Amino acid sequence: MTAEQIQQQQARGFLTLRFVPALEADYRKARSALIRQRARLASIAGLLLFLVYALVDLMTLPAELARFTAGIRLAITCPIIALVLWLAHRKTPDDHHFERLYVFAYIAGGLSVIAIILAARWHSYPLPYEGMILMLMFGYFAMGLPFFSASVASFVLVWAYLLAELWAGNPATATLTNLFFLMTANVIGMVGAWISEYRHRAHFLDRQLLDLLHQSARDESRRKTELITAASHDLRQPLNVIDLTLETLQPEREHSEVMNQLRDTVGQLRNLLGTVFDSARLNEGMIQPELQPVQLNHTLQELEDLLSDTLSRRDIRLDIAPAKPGLALTADPSLLLRVLQNLVINAADHSGGQRIQVNTVTTGNWARIRVCDDGRGLPESLHTQVFDPYIRAGASHQAGLGLGLTIVREFSRLMGGQCGTESSSGRGAVFWVALPVAVTTSPGPGPGSRIQSDCAPPVG
Image 1 (tube, rainbow, N blue to C red):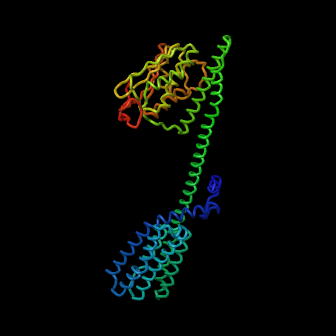
Image 2: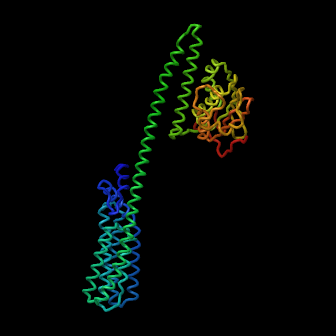
């Protein structure tokens, strides 16, 4: 079954309640499974109904007739319904054969009603024929039989009733009148059953098409994930080789500036690729943070080792103030490092300043890491937009996509934190990220660590 087949069937329509063979087989399989589920409730309802009618027979009919009618209900009809109820909860027979048994049970129930009417005629008791109307409606609606199965079975019962009335010698006029009302009820049931099955078939096509689209989306997401993973490795590998080569080269003094520019270009390209892949991983839901107590000073030291040489070649001074000894945050170590790296690179690329400071302020159960620069600052009008995608303040000529701060915001949210800015135009910029403090029983992360929860971030 393909999406194209389903769409073609929807365009063609199915007024005859038939799909093309490829779809019809799948539909009938699904329908049989649904009938099996429905039979469990319908059988209970039918069983209770015939038990109640058996009791009514014993209470209202003449004794000799009551024994016969109640005997039919209790000895024949109810056991058949109980058998259907029992088989509906078993794996065998399969759904297709169970559907046939279900239709047979409906016919058996209708024949038992005809037998009771016939017995009443023989005993000259004016038992009405309305029980047949109830039986027809039960098959069409309560039992939920397919249109063609219900129509054929109901016509069998109607003609069986007609033959029984003629056999019992019921006057032709009365028989024809009863037959007229039975046929009218049967037509009503057929129309209702046709509408019900038509809607069910339409819903089946919609569900199948939706399932195929979901599967296609999952497959596409998986292919994107594989592509992102492969590209992340394959594109970074040449950059690593270039980096290692540059580190081993001993350039002459007149070439040192060119080598530094080359290192900076490689670093910018690596940051650009990192931003692209981080954005793609976020969009595909590939990032699942592993929250744990993270020693903040360890992360700050990693940040300094990672960026200090690059920034110094650009004549930008990076000052990182140590946090309080033993301060641990509830965070994902790699995401936290990436957040701080993006904030520092953003300040270096777009502030126009010559000095970047990183410090930490704790307020209650939260710690706020601040990245401050001495650059041109950020206009107040951009405070609410600067973390949105593709927003770049000022006329910066640095390479970038305007996604670095967006990634900061998303990574902070994934770790249960917040981020923001305290910048004002002409006075430098301050970007911060706030994360909950982890209460630990040991200096570093471990099985005995306890993560502080139920905290609220600081305001302001």
